[in-house]
Image (tube, rainbow over all chains, first blue to last red; front, top):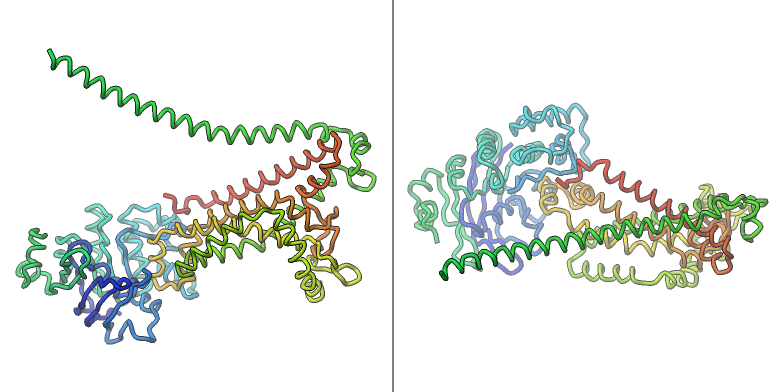
Amino acid sequence: MSKRIDVNNLNVYYGSFLAVEDVSLAIEAKSVTAFIGPSGCGKSTFLRTLNRMHEVIPGARVEGEVLMDGVNLYGSDVDPVAVRRHVGMVFQRPNPFPTMSISENVLAGVQLNNKRISKSDAEDLVESSLRGANLWEEVKDRLDKPGSSLSGGQQQRLCIARAIAIKPDVLLMDEPCSALDPISTLAIEDLIQELKDQYTIVIVTHNMQQAARVSERTAFFNIAGTGKPGKLIEMDDTTTIFSAPSEKATEDYISGRFG
Amino acid sequence: MTTTQDAPASAGSTDLTARQEQAANTIFRGLSTTAALLILITLAAVATFLLAEAWPALTDASGELAAKVSWIKPDDGESLIQIAGFLIYGTVLISAMALLIATPLSIGIALFISHYAPRRLASGLGYLIDLLAAIPSVVYGLWGAIVLIPVLQPFYQWLADYLGWIPLFAPAEDGTVSATGRVALSASIVLAIMVIPIITAVTREVFLQTPKLHEEAALAMGATRWEMVRMAVFPFGRSGMIGATMLGLGRALGETMAVFMILSSGLTYSLQILNAANHNTIASYIASQFPEANSQGVSALIALGLALFVITLLVNMLARWIVSRRAEFSGAN
C-alpha cells in the first residue's frame, strides 16, 4: 500500500519565477521523511509538487520528474485528480468541512467520484479511520456533530482520519502541528509513528526537535536570499543531519547560528 | 518645585487623552446605534402608514366601498379581499417563476466568474453583470415588450404544442397561445433578467469568500473541480445564496414598471402562463389604478400594498429560518 518516491531534477516555477531549483531526492516507502529549513525556502512548495497540489495556484508549474514506484506523476496521461487520491495531504491548519458532521468528514473523500458504499461499510470505515487517527474513543458518541465542534488537535486528527480513509499510498503533512498546543502536537507525533507502518510519510516542519523525534530521514532546504530559488542542501539519516551534517549551512541552521 | 508641578501636568494630559478616546467611542457607538434604530423606525413607520391608510378600506362594510371604488365589484366576485387573493397569487406565481429561471443561471454565472473563468475574463464579466443591474426597469420593460416578446411568442406556441399536457403550458381551448405574447411567462422572463445581476453579484462575492483551506482540503482528497465546488463552495455559500435569492425575490415581488408594460392583465387563479389576461401583480395593479383613484380607492390600493408588505416579510422570515436551521454547521465558529 505504501510506495517510494524518487524525484529527479525538479524545478518549480511560479510564472517565470524559479521558486525551487533542481531537487533530486529519494523517499523510502514506510518511513518518515522530514523537510526542514527556514521560511520561504520552498519546502512546502516542493511538498505540494508530490501530489500536484501546487497546480491550484495559477501559473505554478514544474520541470523534471517525480516517480512514484517508477510512475512519473507528471506523465502526459496522468490525471492530477488521480494522483491526489494516491497521495493524501494534511495541512498546516486543521480544515475539516464545517458543514459536515464528523463521520461525513471522514467519508468525504471516499464518496468522491460518485462512489457508493453501503451503510455498514461506511460505518466500519469511519470507525477504522478514526481509530487509525487515535480519535475514535474521543468522538464515538458524537459522530453526527459538526467537525468544527472539536478542539484544534482533534480537528487535525480528524483531517488525518479523512486522509487515510481513502487509503493513500503516501501521506504528505505540511506543518501539521504548527497551529496546535504541545499536548496535541505530541498526540499527532505518536500517531505519525504508528502510521509509518502502513504509509510513506513526508512531513514539513519548522520544529527541528519534531523532525528529530519523528523522522528517519531529513532533508534540509535553504534559500540564498530573497528572490533566489530554494534549494535542497542535503539529505541524510536524521541522526546524521542532527549530529554530523556534511554541509556547513545545515550545521548553522540546526545549531541556531543561522542568517 | 518644577518637578512637582510637571508631574500633575503630565498626569493630567494622559487623563485628557484617555477621556478623548472615551468620547470618540461614545460618539461612534451613538452613531451606529442611531443608524440601527433608524432602520427599525423606518420599518415601523412604513407598517404604521400602511395599516392606518388601509384601515378605512379594511374595516369598510363592503357595500359602501364598492359603491365608491369603480374596480371593486363584489357582485362579479371581485371584492377587495377576492382581488387581493388574485393579485397575491399572480405576484407569487410570476416572481416564483422568475426566481426559478434566474437562480440557477445566476449561480452558474457566479461560479464561472469565481472559480472557472481566467482572471481577466472574470473581472470583465463581473463588471458587465454589475452594469446590467444599473439599467432602469422601464428600459427592461420597453425592451421586453418590443424586442423580447415577439421573439418568444413562437417558442410559446411550440411549448403549448408539445408540452401542453403540463397545466402550466396548456394552450387556450382553440389550441393557440396568446398572439401578443403579453403573458405571465414573459413577465417572469424579463423579471428574471432583471434579478440575475443582483443574485449573481451577491453569490459571486460569497463564492469568492470560500476559505482556501476548505477548497484545498477537497482537492487534496482527489476531488475534481466540480466536486470541490459541491464539497466546499456550495456548503459554505449556502446562506449567502439564500440571501441573494431573497434579495432577488424582493425585487421581483415589488417590480412595477416592467410587469405593467409587459403583462396583459387579468384576475384569475389560472395556471396557464401562456395565455393573456389571466394574471396581474400587486405592484402593477396599484400602478394601473392609482392615477384615477379617489380617497377610498387609494385606501383600498394601500390595503393591497399592505398585503405585498406582509408577503415580503413572510418570505424573509422563511429565508431566515432556512438559514438558521443548520447554523451549527454553518462554519461560522
